[in-house]
Length: 326
Ligand SMILES: C[S@@+](CC[C@H](N)C(=O)[O-])C[C@H]1O[C@@H](n2cnc3c(N)ncnc32)[C@H](O)[C@@H]1O
Image (cartoon, rainbow, N blue to C red; front, side, top):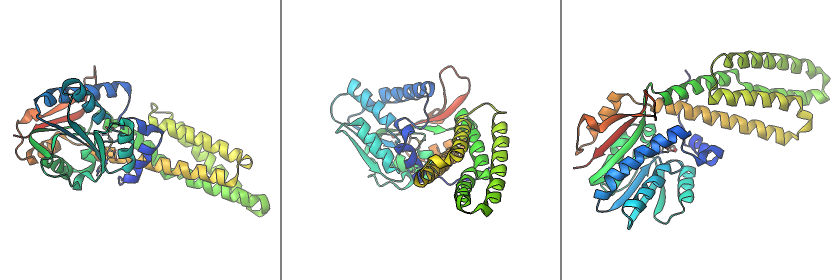
């Protein structure tokens, strides 16, 4: 498998784009399971607190903060503050703008090197976030938890269904990347434009076309042999659109066609990078246990770590970590 370094820009592209209104791990069933987990965390924690200062690390579009706010308003109306933190400024803007609530503010910061004062929050949360920044980020998050406060996290699970889905997506995206379909299409269009004025180039165009459409046919046949996943559906559509663009290239302005190709290349690159980073971020039980052991002053033992199951599913999809500071 190709290693793809995770990048802040790739997440920003997601949070700016059409998909970014949702949580990064989305879908009705998943959303319900995750939301039930957080309602439980907040219902168990918030009534006993003397103040409510909530920090959501790697907040994305702010779904966990929205749940915290709802529970606070229901169980402990009054003074409360919520901070949404992410290293993608687009995520933070989206979280704060969507909430549209003066109590909710945003901070753009790397979770592994955040600068919140020690013990300055009562509840610190992370939904599939801190693990992207590595084990140091959990230590940093724990440092921000006040006495009697809580750190609660949902963590990607190595070998679980979310990691499997990301790995399957990544496999398709890696194969498409290796085939260089988009750079080849760019070259074909450029060469075909030259052929319009220089007939000697026509033979080169034909050679490029034959190789491209043959590789595309083989690729599409191969991905249809396995059950569809989001990446294969996307690539299937992209390769269909690319073929149409090429066939009808005379109907498009140069800038329009070139802009579309650049956009597709960037979108595909950031999707691949996000899938790669999700797979890399996934943790084994031993890794979660090591995080728990590094959190000095936490109450509880083994039961701080548990598996999270999607509704009606036998297979666990994530680790739950719940720590309370003495
Ligand atoms: C899978 S998304 C989860 C977002 C949100 N918690 C949710 O559940 O919808 C991972 C988030 O982690 C953020 N992230 C990745 N690495 C980070 C880092 N080093 N510091 C802060 N945020 C980071 C990304 O920008 C992205 O918003």
